Amino acid sequence: MSAPAQRPKVTEREARQVAEAARERDWHRPSFAKELFLGRFRLDLVHPHPLPAAEDVRRGEAFLAVLRDFCETRIDGARIEREARIPDETITGLKEIGALGMKIDPAYGGLGLTQLYYNRALALVGSASPAVGALLSAHQSIGVPQPLKLFGTQEQKDAFLPRLARTDLSAFLLTEPDVGSDPARLATTAVPDGDAYVLDGVKLWTTNGVIADLLVVMARVPASEGHPGGITAFVVEADAPGITVEHRNAFMGLRGLENGVTRFHRVRVPAGNRIGPEGAGLKIALTTLNTGRLSLPAACAGAAKWCLRIAREWSGVREQWGRPVARHEAVGTKISFIAATAFALEAVVDLASQMADEERNDIRIEAALAKLYGSEKAWLIADELVQIRGGRGYETADSLAARGERAVPAEQLLRDLRINRIFEGSTEIMHLLIAREAVDAHLSVAGDLIDPEKTLADKARAGARAGGFYARWLPGLVTGPGQLPGAYGEFGPLAGHLRYIERTSRKLARSTFYAMSRWQGRMELKQAFLGRIVDIGAELFAMSAACVRAELLRTTGEHGPEAQQLADAFCHQARLRVEELFTRLWSNTDDLDRRIVDGVLAGRYTWLEEGVVDPSGEAPWIADAAPGPSARENVHRRIP
Image (cartoon, rainbow, N blue to C red; front, side, top):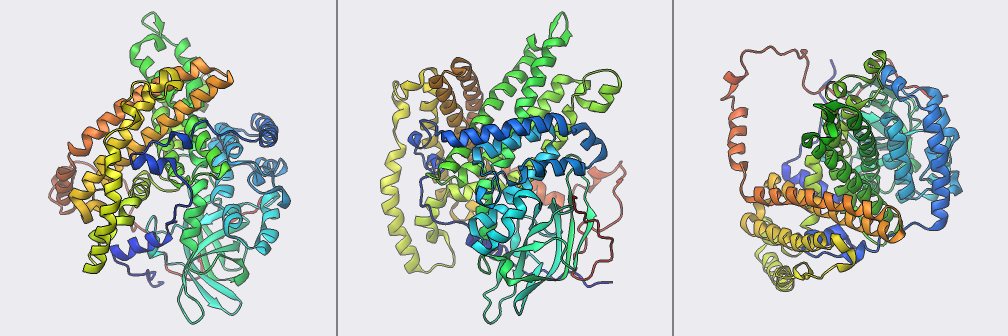
């Protein structure tokens, strides 16, 4: 039997230090969301709504037309669901139309689409098959092309990007069987050996890994003479000797996903395939995700639009008690929520995408908020659609078709969307990540005051900095344009919502400041509180995006009145959620919950678990990932 995997022993503080070192610390450009959390409603950063250049529109629309035809004629979503595999000919067809190179510069054979049109393409293809959408997103949003674009050498770009634009699929390998969002414990190693590195380790949940040609692999380089070491990124040929895809994972949704377990045993990787310097791997991953995360909410927005269509068509046909179910208030409120939220989700994605294209703003918080908000709200929308459809919502599309009814895959969408609350940072991790960025200004000036390792001199300097910052900042939280009845009048019926956003952003900043003053160094432990703070900010960001989009549509003459009505409904719904979140900041069961958790872990409630059987199999909770040669068949396959 192989020895257990030797994982780095790290304390909680060391793990946090690793994550902190990987953060992009500087703010060279303004951030709408960052200012929002600080109580400053910088409408000028998002209004007038940024627009794409005419040539970008021409190229983007031309490709969307090709892609739409491909989705309608060459993607069989029902077959993918049934066979739990994307047919090879579908993937080959995607290569032929250039879909692998949507974000790759034309100089390397790609289409060079903007982030806006790339996301619209993902929403379109994801509506045909979420599994195909996930394949394309994993390939370009977090796979090899994006980190090479941002951090690769010219030689690496010349060698790999032409392949990735037309023929080669890529995958991103970070997670390990015992390592998720805590990369400080990463166990896969890359040991320098002459002009190469030797990789050993096991990676889990490698989306596209079963069929990928090129991999981005994160591995730990041990420090030695001439090697600073640290977590480092490499481009690795998927068919290199020593690589075995040991298993193709199966999930409750996205059944066509080519996701597996990949083992590396003495895999030699040329030093020229290292992306960036040693130790920069996590920073590369996080920077890649700044815009890469936008692909997920794009798919969520597309799913919401489909749900609206099905809800509209079905609830107008299905009758109960003498009238269509849509005319019953219990169902009508669900339809209103779906319509208003679908409008807001598209507004959030389009605004964040165009901001990414213009590169005038730092969108790291906006992209994270879009991912968080989109994944949570799309899941709720799909759940409401299943409820509206009733028993037919729970029935599979194949079963509906066999009975002679329209094959509506509502239950499949619910299963497919569920992973988005976990993919690319779970909701809980996104709360913490966004909260860290939201309080960055406070920690920058006053962080040393609550750091137990800082000296008295450090604390004194921090006190002086904090005094100056808060003397300027706090007075600005007292009053603002949101208290002026005529403010934002150009937005017409939506002006009141913008005044609400301005007032509420200041209230949010005051609440955050009060919490930091109250809990100081214990603030990082108040994860439930921080989650609510972030959720309030997410609602305010979505409200802002909805209002700005509605005003854009009004001024361009495209469905202006209807857009204003949807934005108005969404903002009213969001305001109710915000007020509830503010109440729960200070009136909650957090302390009681912690006591219950202590009791559960101590085994005080095991009597409550009696009277049932456990159908789980007998095996370790976490599979052994000890390095060494593979004893399993290699299930990696190439797409012809």
